[in-house]
Image (tube, rainbow, N blue to C red):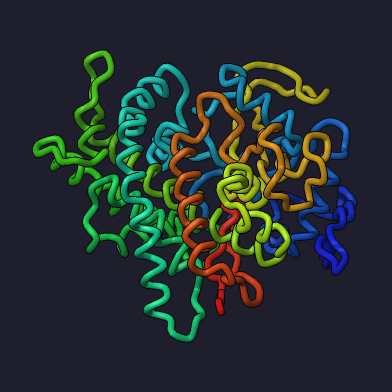
Length: 430
């Protein structure tokens, strides 16, 4: 696969289109190819009339049969339509491309692998932990967490270099979500290891086998069961206690439901902010003019800047839906039971919707909306507002105390078609 260029010495260039038969979204090699090449491939898909169907990847050690393939949704409008049509495109048959037993879907995905009325019931219960009152409690110490993290960074790195992911981007959301859940500090490292494993599927550094993945997921679920039962018996001032006590129509969370939601919440509560912060610092390094705009008047530009960082980085690459009846999308017939996969990274670069989509612009209007948190509908990210707040506070802390913070060299990216992750990234400051 040849290298392509998006960033030049004179500004931004639209990536070159890649011939449609030169790439395969199901090929593992595609997801470790040059990123500009991938941008060109998605541009080709957006410009190709109708929808392109792909065969699914076949993995030798997979205990599950190969699926029947999927249609790639790469345009903003198609993603928006499917997200807001949950009766026509369901989540309950799987949220990842491959097919696994429904029990496993719900174990790893909790309510993102459910449809109504099951989804509505569970979201109604757990959302009681994310009321304005509960999120307001978090805001009281997000600033304190960010301040302490930067304090540690300066104190522990006298050479003024660090791994930004480990020392900043991962630390903030990990400590906040653990505090919210009532997880003690001595368990932070354990939680971090579990989340890396679950998010690292596809990257041999983190997951070497399905057995390893299941073992660590079961450890996490067992931990959650114990925490939930403890809080039900002896409530504390945390959202685990709120959720374990919450009722909808006289029903509470079962230990199994809490265990699965715990996996979803802890993993998702870390992933979005961790990778958005990392991609944000990389963008500010690549586009210093945009950093100057934000840092020169942070209050005026922070809201649009945080949305632009999520659009630019798009931490979650895709989610799948399954058609519940025969329908049509972009002129392509879709049969009942066929899969469609929403590639949010492509929707966030759609030239039909965003002006100059390959320009990182911290003043970009909030509408049309980026789809990095999903594109509306019942599965819109429950923690989006918390992620926005965490990002805003941390970048504010950085621009006040370490405005020269910048990336050195190239990041070490996660090998994944699901998470646009950065594993390690060296930074320096003056």
